[in-house]
Amino acid sequence: MTKVINHIKEIRLQRGITQIQMAEDLQITRQTINAIENNKYNPSLELALKLIKYFDVPIEKLFYLREDEK
Image 1 (cartoon, rainbow, N blue to C red):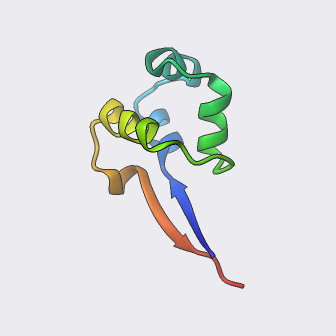
Image 2: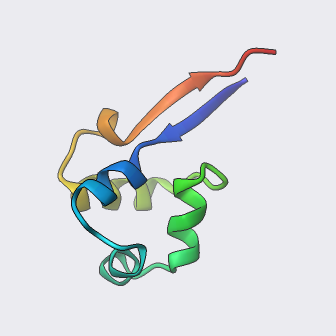
């Protein structure tokens, strides 16, 4: 099974951005950010593109696919 993994939390913390600040900036809830950071929710394509623009990084820095072993 393939799973989408992200580095959003690491990048956010490196830049000193809180979940609340990020939620306000992106006009989403803090709970959504928390769910994305904990790989419980995959953002929509629109939100993924907003995240890439927000952090100004290539998509590969934010998201990658991981093959889970059975």
